Structures are given as C-alpha cells and as structure tokens.
Image (cartoon, rainbow, N blue to C red; front, top):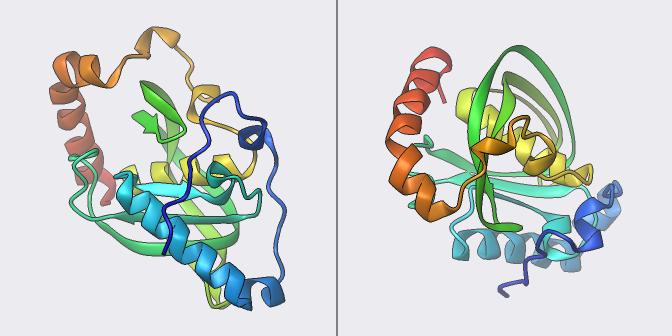
Length: 190
C-alpha cells in the first residue's frame, strides 16, 4: 500500500464536485488498490475520514473509521466504512461540532451539523449501503460527503471567532468540547 499526498486548502481539487463512478470502475484492481491506499493514508494521518478528492482523485469515494483516534479522543469508535457515490438525507436537530480537517492543517472551528443522517450508496464491493447515523458520527459523515461536493468545513463555520489552532483548541476549548461531545453521544448515540 501507498501513503498518498493530501491536498491542502487552496488547491483547486478540493473545490471540485467529485464525479460518480460506475460499478465496473469500482471493481477494477486499480480502484481497489486506491481504496486500500486511501484507508492507509487516513490511518497514517490519524484522520476520522478521508475523501478521494483530498488525495487528488475527484471521484465519489470516501472512507470513515474511528478507532481510539488520538486526534479525536472524544469521538466514539466507528467501524471502517467505505462509501461510494453516497447520498445523504439530513434531518432532526443540529449541534455545534468543533471540526478539523486533514486538508486544513492546524485549524479547527465550530460547524453546525445535523444530528441524524441517512446514507445511501455502495460499499467497496458495489453492494448497496443504507445506513442511519447519529450524533458525532453523523457529523463525520457530513464532513466527508461535503468534500465530495467541493466543500470544506470552513464553508460551514458560521462564527469565525471559533477558529483556533490545534494547540489553542487543546489549551482553551478541548475540555469544554469533551463535555458537549459526551452530551451529544448520550443523547443520540454515536
């Protein structure tokens, strides 16, 4: 497997709307290797998710996986999920989510997210996926699917005064956000 280079804010690929892929493309050895590399890159960077256009391939594929992630100690674990051509339906209440992004290094900010999403698409084998996701995990799914639509979390930040470096987030905001995150998990589950 290969660790891929991650595009950072300002690169045009992050603003492209990713194209859907066919089941035939998905089944190819090249695409399956790419998905393995996407996951490897996400794990290497301690990401909770990674979209294909973040590694310079503007196709509708993303990976989500949270397993005792040191970058996001407040996020509940979630099994490795590969989404192909995902479509989200959002509903219910919203919550303020302190987000960071591998493509926006050393910056965090509060983005409002829906507490409930329904995700439809395919898995890496081309089988249909129909998931309901709640809480902080719903925020992760929205974040990754935003990438596929050419958006970054900064586009969702409604109050730029919440922007902070990682060091200052940990120093001034982490403990308060952990309390809010626990309340979100208690209310909605993951």
